[in-house]
Length: 488
Image (cartoon, rainbow, N blue to C red; front, side, top):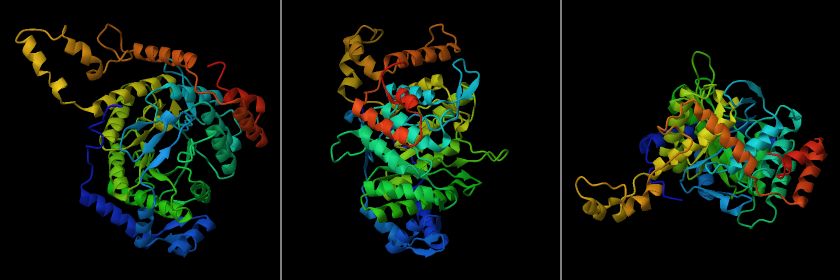
């Protein structure tokens, strides 16, 4: 992979501003405190040195500092295909597919339908085949599966249909053991230093509260050293102050509190921080995920992660508030992804997602378009290479005034590495802009027909289906969804 010279070059905050936000979060934790609904979490924090008053926990600054000092600064996201593992903390550009949409947009850009389990299977395979998707999460929340059993179903389908790292979203702690066991089965025999092919995570409930389900899951992951993403997604002006600095104080306080808990449970607990904090639309109070403020918050969060020595494992970009594949979606997706990368958001969730309508809708075709956008952003991050070869002084001398560089060996040798060419975008070749959706649709169909993720063994499939059946899911449907051979 070529160097991404421009990654993280954009600084949103000065060093003093980073310190002021961090200090504000410490003050908030020690004076205002944070609610932990789970009694076991409160007792763990009390034993570590926090002050507990009912459900509210006040965490002193010295306890936060001690927690930040003991944990690992890098987190490895293992994968079934070992060459697809990702080490967070190396400050490089990683993009993922999307998360949890409930509806699918038709291939012509019109018509909505509810997402199904087969959509999750197909979209995960598409993500597995797209080079720009660094690791996978559950793209949709299917309507045709029992909603109280989704945790097990989502984990099994995603783990079976990608050999990349899988980030598994768990909505409750009820099936934590089953989900973790599914991850262990998918991983097979792993090197001891990279034992897990999946990660888990939880979200705070802003402002300053963690539900019991979240911290129970965090505890189970910490004890097993499963990579865990601590995510905050406040709506500025509703769940956090309308000012971006104030929202960052709340978000950072939430991140720090959960980090203290994780490392009180297990000092080596591999945690990363995440954010989809973004502003409300004051006209509707809805969260705006395509807003420029989201990109600013991403960049500031990257600097706060660096300040605390925690990887930024879940930035957000590539989402649009538009419900259509069009001008608004292109502007919002491009802006938030490029700005987040320039500001040093190491993992940009949803950048290669196909997500529309503020996270409610996914389009297969938009997902392919998004992946191409990410490829362009990656080329931009590489910047301009300056060395003897690229300066080309001997070639300039040979060609001289009025000559052409078209037929030189220098051009033939370097144009593929220097210039990004796309067979998806309009290139001035006479195609109408409307053909983009058609080209994207053709690519979706060809990829799904040709690409297969690395298969699980028969023994792994059998073990997964045993869990699938044990919780009450239909075994026949499960076999079709977790077997990688067969129809696209």
